[in-house]
Length: 135
Image (cartoon, rainbow, N blue to C red; front, top):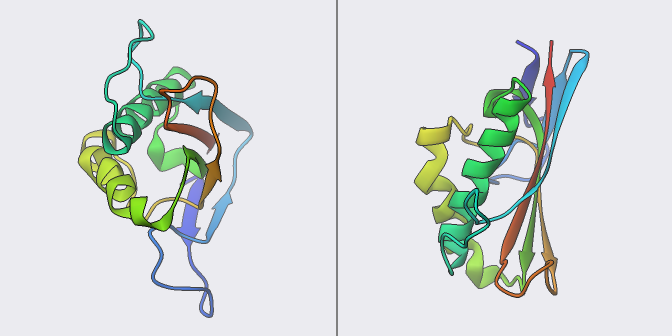
């Protein structure tokens, strides 16, 4: 297996992701920020939960285009507009809604959630970036 995920003793718990990914391989797949729109660029949802789910579906398509899947992901970065801790339930529900469908590991690979004022258009609430390593 090219990617091993773990959380060493002494690191904060519980968290919905692993703290460490160790990967071997020479092919790297980097998926640019994906948002909650379909292939025609039309919004799929207006809420955070729905946009996270669609952004992850788009991320899965990007990974597949590089010959990868979520099992090869070593890093996820989520950018969320107007973030506040009270949004965590909707955020996690959006992930949970598609985790089985897309093969998203639970807990997640190492991940960062970064709150931003805005993304490139006003209706975009979330953007997801992924990095994968293949043998």
